[in-house]
Length: 106
Image 1 (cartoon, rainbow, N blue to C red):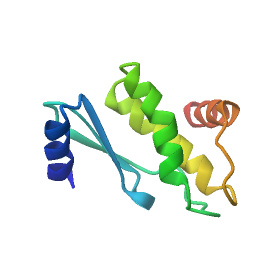
Image 2 (cartoon, one colour):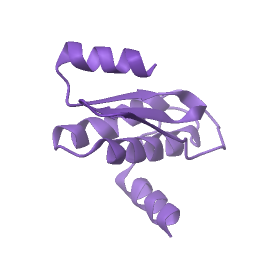
Image 3 (cartoon, rainbow, N blue to C red):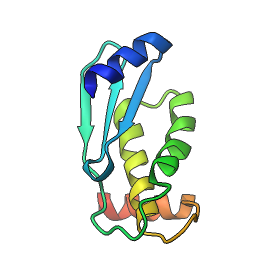
Image 4 (cartoon, rainbow, N blue to C red):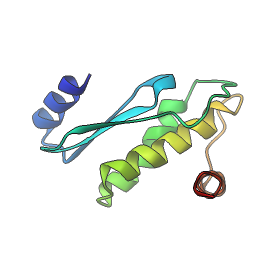
């Protein structure tokens, strides 16, 4: 997967790239840098539908603002972790993101 990510980033001229890996988390990469795999942050799955959408919805604005790949992966995995704990198509809120991050960082 890392070679595909690198190839597509080059083809698109992208500064950052990310691929979700389901229960394994995600892979992120900055142009001309090594890829980094980041673990999933939830093992309790109620409904996996929409987890990738939540990842994208929370990481795209951060990428636009120039956030580093590690931040994208972390926030994206937090959003996906929250989403898989919800039944149905419920949005992931800023309050939920804040609570999860505070809980993870203690």
